[in-house]
Length: 179
Image (cartoon, rainbow, N blue to C red):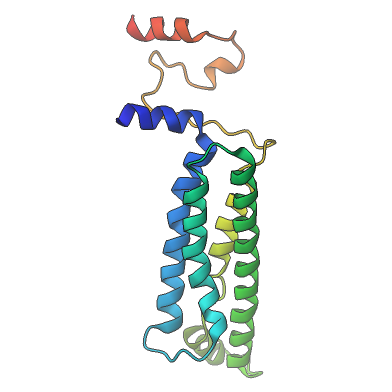
């Protein structure tokens, strides 16, 4: 069973990475929910956007990794990715505006310290942008992506050793492993 999973991951490395990145959306959504609502009133409905995006984005990415349609996977990953980048950038702008408002025109060390302790974290929403950018570029055919799952090749034959040498066939590599 585990061998079949590893074989699938080797053959579908982009989808395997998407499945590994998808729970990160839920983790970011949970973090945003705690930061926005723990012990606070629900006064700004825009704060629900990153929470909803995280859950929906995770479900979408997990759903499109199973079928074999490359186009559906690519378009969904790019859509979820662009949404993540936009949500992260917009959240950063909202957090900076809130921080600016907390400063109130005073730029002393005490007011800066107070603004940083009371205002929302400035760079936290960029986590959505980073994960969204990864999901956006993941289906790109111009991105060279090699996922090696399993035991490494024995005999010290790493990727740097093969850079200048001749190519080795799969059967030769298997013979070297068994020797």
